[in-house]
Length: 375
Image (cartoon, rainbow, N blue to C red; front, side, top):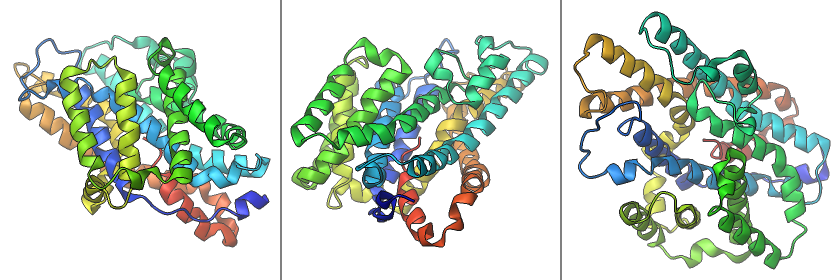
């Protein structure tokens, strides 16, 4: 183990950032369920459609948060160099965080594909996403690098996240050589690029957002930005972001990205009023299962929607009751997957790394927080 790894102390936990993950994941659910693109008519959701239609931006929030937290936890590990041992441990821990749940939800999507053909008598439109080459790319988590689809549609972002993890140790080492003005420059460039065609590719989208998160955490550490925002910044920013849904088009990614970055900064301030709400136990638990919710909701919704078409053919799947039921079922499935797949799978894959007793306490402290980073 390198000297840098020995020097890494368990980081201060930021429960408000875990709590923020739940609503962000629900925003993605709201984008996929009430606004289902496969259904012609949509119910009137009390005028909230403008918010639901921008739910996909929850992924950009996650990408920024991921960069912020990963840098928060691992900055000192890679600041002075990238040793093979540290990089290997980092990659194993990140792999163990996302792969088990990704594979299980993909198997669920494949089972649904078979059921769609033989039970529901429907052929999914994106049949290429279920090909052997697509399944192989998904197992390796490289599908979105090459424009290959996923049986479980939201998994494109896991592939992008995996690319960020691979790059991070080297990115961190390079950035740590920069003066403060260099960090600010990198952050500004990454933010400005969110307004270009670069973000139309998953790797471009994660590159910009993840880098913004990394820079944000470094600037917070050096300049103490969160405390400067005051205790009402969180509520004000949330209100501004929600209000923006009605007058800012969803293509204005730089504006939403800036709002997300500032919101993450505000929530990392222990005095922030919104942060205190986000840190309450029910929201923190929702945040803990948010990755499972994000990964399972499309499969759960697709199964539920197709079952509804069989048992109640006249019922509109995007009317109030089916969408609420679909959301509740997704939350239940997420809780089960979190406890029975995500956590056991993570511990199983990391087991070999826990043989060194001097690092056990450190692993728990670092990883409890780093787990905030995955979607």
